[in-house]
Image (cartoon, rainbow, N blue to C red; front, side, top):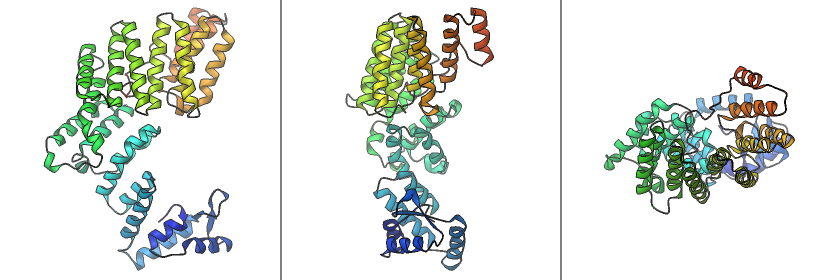
Amino acid sequence: MLARLDGALCDAVTGQAGSQAQLETLARRHVFLVSLEGTRQEYRAHPLWAEALRAQFAAEQPGALPLLHTRASQWFEERGMAAEAIRHALADQGVARAADLIEVAVPAWRRTLQDTVILPWLEALPEALLRTRPVLCAHYAKALMQAGRWPEVEGWLLAAEQALGKQAQIVVRDEAEFRRLPAEVAAYRAVLALGEVGAADQHARDLLALAPETDHLARGAAAGLLGLATWHQGELGAASWQWAACQAHLLRAGHAADAVGAALAQADIFVARGELRQAQHTCEQALQFAAAHHGALWGAADLYVTLSGVFRQRHDLTAAQACLQKGDALGPHAQWAQYDGRRRVAQAELEMAAGRLSLQEAEAWRLSRGASRVCCGRPGTAEAG
């Protein structure tokens, strides 16, 4: 039942002592155990052997497995290994316990750039249970946004609000997230309203009114949304100021990846205003704190695309091409969904600046590869914190 065999874990699950010595003995005798990563601390059972043992155990002690999964889940929880704890909680049908673990884990996953794991875990829970957990409803709404499933978002925001109205029936595990729930719902509503600048602006101001001074995530979201609204209205100076405030709040909240998105917005505004030195400084500064995360922050590759445009406008085509290559080298985990389109536009403009393509050829080259002059699409949730 265990994907990885560790002496302390096996002791906890079996209620016995001496598991590590038994594992080492079995491994020395080559009894269907493989040492993981060249160590003598963790092992993996041969899949066919593990399957046979599970079948034998289920036949001999059919009622014991849920208890063992509960013990494993508790062991992993105590060590901060949320995914493993949740997996074992679900395996013993402990969906309420799994919901507790997910609720606590989501903010940490977002800070450590593991957003993609959130939606599958939430969808492993029964819908009826989700609807009694307002914090999970809001988390689900954001996960749906990130997956591009926009028509489903409003229903889960309503579910969060309806659950809040039934105080006696709801379950809350993460009190901090519960307290900031009204501000979080307001933030997502503002994202949904971005097609209507006036409505988005009002939602963002409502969010500022709801968020305390210490809630840097919510205040960063509000500043980013106001930045988008003023940008769409052509007020580039005001938009730049809002994005700077957004970035500062997100960094204080520990959301470095979203802060990269705020820096990218600032840099694009500086380029639009012809302030190339400031755009370069903003990109390079953001790339420095992305480097602290091994360059793996979401949006770091997009910063290189903007930086490439800065060098192209300065007629340093070698540096411009190098920036595009650096962005590609970071890989998909550092690229926004719009990266491919933005990158193709930048390459076409670079080819035209080098005299290798005419304007008409560059346009045809760009369109033949599915790129678009407007690559932003519908704003994602990075801008909303």
